[in-house]
Length: 230
Image (cartoon, rainbow, N blue to C red; front, top):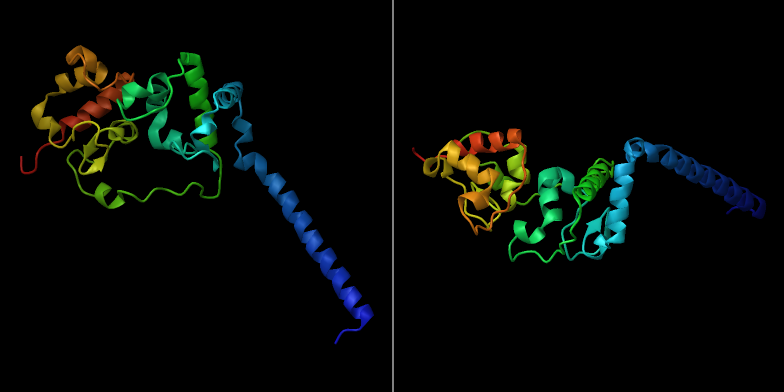
């Protein structure tokens, strides 16, 4: 059994030791913040995007960095998950992207405001959040199924699979794209992706505003999607 003096010394030394450890951990955390939060890449466009996010109460529906509502999708990694083309289309007109499926308000943002929001999402997505949010595991087995044309292009995975499926992976709003290369030639696919309304007035597919390089990448990939055995 410890004497009073020994107990006092044990308490004081323990307090000093763990107090020093706590201070060291605090200092170390603050030293890591600039790198982990991407502070060096913070620019005026990102700041304006954050202001738009706050002024429109986006957190009333969405979650960002673990904070917000759970009515609408979590957006911390939306830039990597969906890419700038899809984000821009959603911000311009959510109903056009998901007819009858989404209840997001059309805010009538200007193109400059949309660019600022995209810059904000990109900056948020580059933060080192120690593995948050975790990578989704849904559909990984199906995604491993071999399909014609090789690996899906990034723009296809970000934009097209939001509505269409291929090999059992993707959305169900639009038709499945398996075998689409047998049904349509490259010229038709290019016209369709460039301006769906010009090809089929009244179609639910929106004009996504992809670059020439992105459209070419998608068309080449889709043209290789053939029915099994053909």
